[in-house]
Amino acid sequence: MPTSSSSDAELEDLPETPDITGAYPRLTDEQIMLLSQHGERKPLTRDTVLFSEGDRDRGLFVVLDGRVRVVQEDGPGGEPRVLAIHGRGRFVGDLSMLTGQAVYVTAVAQTDVEVVEVPYDRLKEAVTQDQALGDLILRALILRRNIRADLGAGLRIIGSRYSAGTRLLRDFVSRNRIPCRWEDVEDDPGAEATLRAFDIPPDQTPVVIWQGRTVLRNPGTTELADLLGLRAAPSRTAYDLVVVGAGPGGLAAAVYAASEGLSTIVLDAFATGGQAATSSQIENYLGFPAGITGGELADRAVVQARKFGAGFTVPGEATSLTQADGYHVVGLAEGGDLDAHAVLVATGVRYRRLDVPGTDRLEGSSVYYAATEFEARLCRQDAVTVVGGGNSAGQAACFLARRSPEVNLVVRHEDLGRDMSRYLAERVEKSPRIRVWRTTEVAELLGDEALEEVLLRDLRTEQKHRVTTTALFVLIGAAPHTDWLRGQVPLDAGGFVLTGLAAGCHDGTLETRRHGVFAVGDVRSGSVKRVAAAVGEGSAAIRQVHDYLEAVGRR
Image (tube, rainbow, N blue to C red; front, side, top):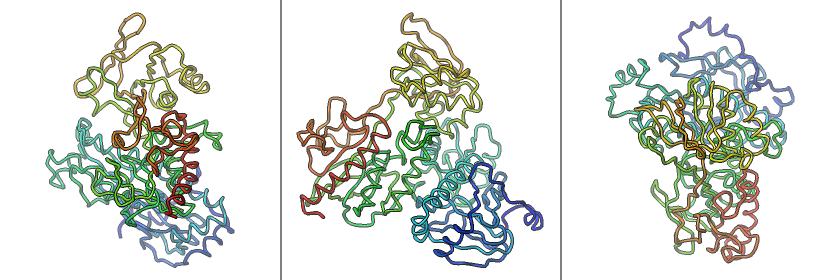
């Protein structure tokens, strides 16, 4: 199988990729021996494919002798591109093997090699004997995924920056940490050439190209998720627990429920990780003194929950909650129902939309509700504006300031430390690239097809300022996602779910007035809106789920 435009001799001479960031660690002899006990030793000839882009349920390969190259099959220009070379003591794999998704790269024997293949189930056994080894492998695979995303490896999305469909797909892959390369038909001649090569008319864009040959024309997120393995088919007729929402609270609940033997499936309408996954750096979460990105925290939690047997369906949007034959029934927007003995609501909140002139026109191209690496790459060193005064806005401003020469932070009040952690407020104020506009609001978005300026209004003087900017990040307020629960469980005036005494239940319980339905995290009325608080509630709720199941004779 040809994997590069280079000659065989050139490929064989390629040096091993250096380990600069920790993405390519070398295993110790003891670690190799442990993995060998759980795998199968295999001699392979040069050019043998270990796994291919699009494969699922593949194992980890430990290189005992020779070299293995990892390539992107459909690289820029249509030629395969070498992403990494692994020699003796290195391991070859993809984060997808742990999250249940399709693999985004191809691995090929660069020389005659000897490897140990460790299947996923056996790998789980091995890392329970050496937790440091498990953490080493997980961290390396997450770092490799980030590196590949920066290189544009993975699937290709071709479409117009002005297309709402393109924006939806870009947001979906970004929020789910899926490596991809976006090609804008507005300014990329190669994108137009690709569309002609596949005979795709403009009205069938955006287009997703997978493995260089599978083409989805104007797909929805469900169709794309099915292709990539994000949607697990129900494994049983009724679950012990359906978790609705895969933010920190829902993920914690899934880990504890599955680890304690409850059949568990997790639904999320858009992506695992919730709003926390959009954070570029969480620095006040216990156990991570150097901070951790929201995406890495989410990926680690998904891997942990899957290790214990929890299933995930993304997108899986809950649209109704009813009862039938003694079960709670969760209706899905994508079709079908899920029956459960218990339901845990962890749908969190969503940032409110900025209701000012120009938003409708420019929201598809220039307005964002998250600030991740993907959005930062789209800003292209231009000036940007962030709206909001909480931690999410402060983190976004600091993160964007690494790339953008000018970040405008618009806050409606005077005291930056009112809603923002003090350490973060001080960092914002000290950054030479961040300008804070206090007691100010956005009055209008200016530009025809793309954002060019924002019109700011001083709330004290009514004075207006035109500020050049190419992207607007809106991180203001939050509204709970509970419309699907109305009429089924009591909500407070703001739409948040009532639990415990407020719902007429025992004090301290996370159960709603409807027995067997629980709520945790930001969606719960009176909760502390912090990642650690949501994780605590998600784990604590499972004890109460057990009590409920035992009381009604379902365990």
